[in-house]
Length: 296
Image (cartoon, rainbow, N blue to C red; front, side):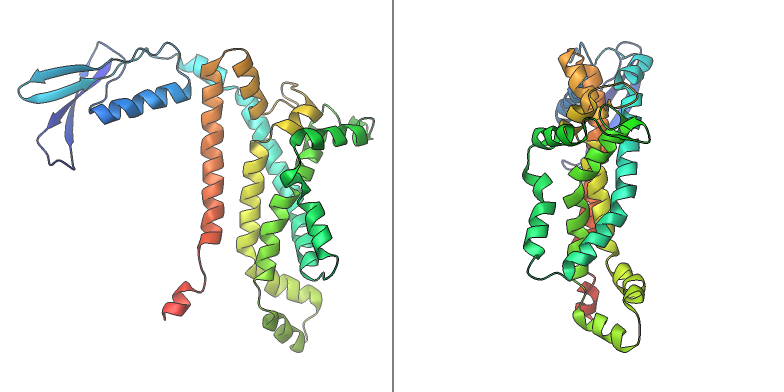
């Protein structure tokens, strides 16, 4: 079945189309530029045996462009997407974010008050940013290869990849929150101390609410980085279906097996999720709370 898009009268900037459904091909789209976009989307999402063609019809001074491709089997597409690995990646990302945020808030708050030893602590916490994932995975295997928690081994298990993910995401969770704490004026803390508030009250009632942008940004970055983590997870957990085989490892396996449609479908899901998380993070940091105040 195909939708033939015929261009009607319109301005050069705004093109108007009318659709006619024809039982010939799978789908059609009008406009040469839209043909290229559709072709890119089909290839990116991994549809096999794409038969793309353009047919120009001149009927009553109306230009018609047709693009067709074989209709994919929806059941096979969902199966190839490997929903189990995507859900496992989401589970790992949510667990990592929930566990590391309290630790990140505590460490970031402590770093703000450090003086001489602060650069060394910051450098140590930032190591996962520059070290190759294989190096982190190697040290993890050497350190925790024969270790178990409550009888659960840390290697080739979900607990192991969770612990590895927590270590890898330390800088993503700490640095945005630390910058948010540093942006709080010292005069606010001094005024709170003069008012008789304790350190815990200052942190809970003043500093924590003022740093919400950094906390939200840290959560978004941690989630996005975890959902696409590959090297450490592969070395520590392997590729056990339902246990350690995350979406990124599933993409690797499908590419190795020449399953481009399945790899493309999973990659598209990860792309959309990561883009949404990064957009949320940039939205939190891109707004200037003093902008409207300065204008007034």
